[in-house]
Image (cartoon, rainbow, N blue to C red; front, side, top):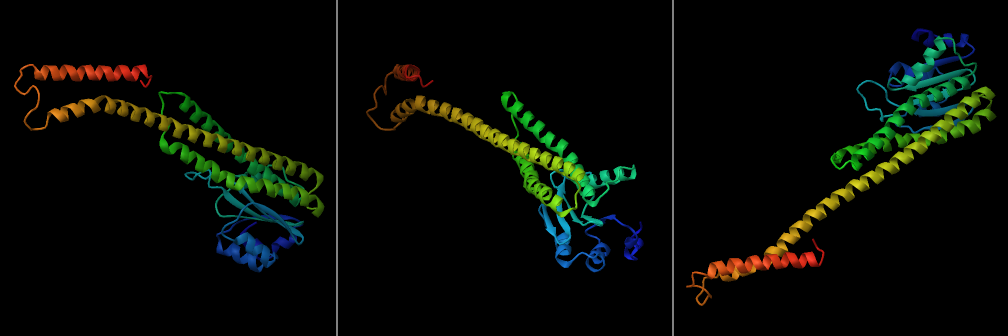
Length: 306
């Protein structure tokens, strides 16, 4: 359909329809507020700027917010995109601010003839497509954590200071939405069957998506814990290197402390200094300092300080 078909009321000719709209479009916003038939509370929820994943039964329909990976070229994968839905028996209205590849996957499947036979089936298909797109991205997080562990085990490689912090930030940003998405799908599974929006066949797909999202959230928890341990190891390794350097400096300072004292004492410019007129005094002084240095090193070795 064209946009004029939507605004002219042609939607009434269809027993069931799906509209996928740009949330930032002023025309789409005006239609949703004035002509969609969706009440004001649901409309405000669909158009609000910031959302978190949730699924709420509202009247005869469901207000659903889910998140998907940002697979648009040149953008960060972890900047997850919101897919807002209003699902009723006869209609599914979805809104997005940027292109969501999962919605295109479902659209292409429908054009190929794989059309869900209910609105609930279409919601389940979208949830499954969003999950399908998440799995390889989270798998890459797991592989990146493995690479960081290998680098830490290899003494010849040093992990860049900012790499692990950036990795943790990305993992936490995805986890921020995966955890509530797991709860939203679980709630949708509980409420959907009672509302009659989902058939038993639809519920199988929805339960599978909910289970997969739960597994992905658990993987993210594990990756987050691994990254925390890795960062602690990096901090510990750097602290150990710093302690070794300070230890070397302390040994050097301890060795040269008596030498500095003696040379400082003999460097005072006053009368009565021993050996002032003796040609052997300098050689005796240097020899005494060398013997003192060897004695200090032997003492440290005996005490197992070095």
